[in-house]
Amino acid sequence: MRNILSMIVLLIVALTSCSPSVTLSPKVISSASPIAKMLLTATHITTQGPTSTIAPATSETPSPTATRVAFNSLASPNGEFVANAYHGNELLSRIPIIEVQNKEGKLIWQIPFQGEIPTTYPRRELDIFQWAKDSSKLYFYYVLDPDGGNQSFWWTGLDLQELNIKTGKTSPVLPGEGFMSFSISPDGTQIAYIRRQDQPSVIYIRNISSGIEKTAYILNDSSNFTIEGDIYWSPKGNRIAFQTQDSDYMVQTIYLNLDTLKQKVIKKYLVHTFEFQGWTNDEKLEFWEYAKNGAQIIQINVRNNISVVIGTPTPSP
Image (cartoon, rainbow, N blue to C red):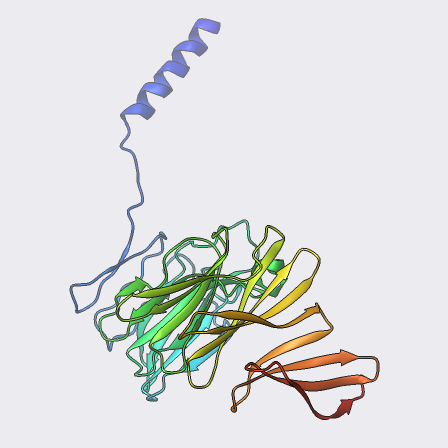
């Protein structure tokens, strides 16, 4: 009996080894242009040209009552396009996507989730960052929802990319891997960014077109830093303010002069005692102060560090 069972097992193994193997090839979004986007997903999605609609994924049958609501929508500056980002749990495929429509409401490009954030993160999303000033590009990136902890607090996200609205080609914007903080200048020509991977910490100022960079080591860098980011450009685009936080929840708001690359600490405070709001129109830094008698606005001149209280304290609820 044992010999008969052994012969059966050997026969099954032999038959299996003779069967052809099945592999999943990367799928391609085809377009009228010769550029194609390789997908890291088995879902098949195609387009026939810049003005065509995109067929839905065929892996699941849509429910008649299924609706999709974008968690982020952003119109292009020229009003010709609208980008919509959808949560994975709102789609039948369970895969986050970004869709771009023209002003007639026709779907022209679809950006699929490419797996930049591992499935071990429960709230990972593909999101819109912003449009280029001339509406020629859409910047998008990968992000964790707020319950992602410190990785989503001041760290903007990872893998910032751009979509060429004419060709559908996507390409990376920033070098490096892992979480980053980044912010584009008001005129759209430069981007400031900080990479979590860098030790010691560095802030980069990159010309988006040429790729030329200026760099500066972040002040008072130490192994106690847990977060750097929350980057704000001044209205004129010639100054930057950003923040750091250490393991003791002490925050520094740092001013960077882009002409000299000199930095100085504008304010140092414990988390939840102040909240940085960014630049005012007259190039001051603005904070909300939370105190026993309520909240108040404080503005600080970066040249001389003089603080001015704006208005009277608002009673806390």
